[in-house]
Image 1 (cartoon, rainbow, N blue to C red):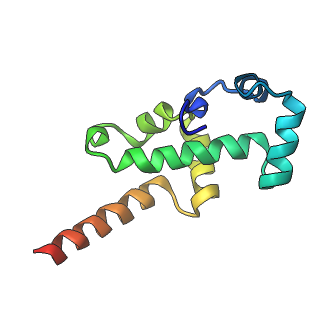
Image 2: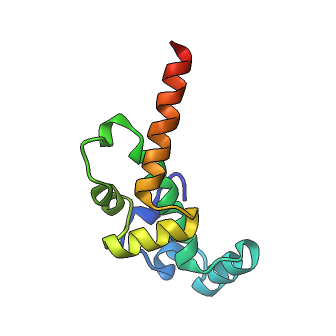
Length: 112
């Protein structure tokens, strides 16, 4: 998941990931459910949310909108991105970015 990043594909399906792993779809689904307590889409979206959180604070993404970054990490729509992000983090993407900007400025002021 971390090397090939299949979750960046917005059309990723269980059978696609199973094929990449050379495993039967039902086996992969059972493992995700039993080991992680997640369904396939929650599992994939967890990676997408984490990838968004990494990218949104990088300088090379500062000129992109939050939705543009969300699309880059595999989300199909603004509505689903906002809903899923909040489900996984308990805050909105804008709140996350504001928190990161505040914590970065606090670090900068402590260094001066």
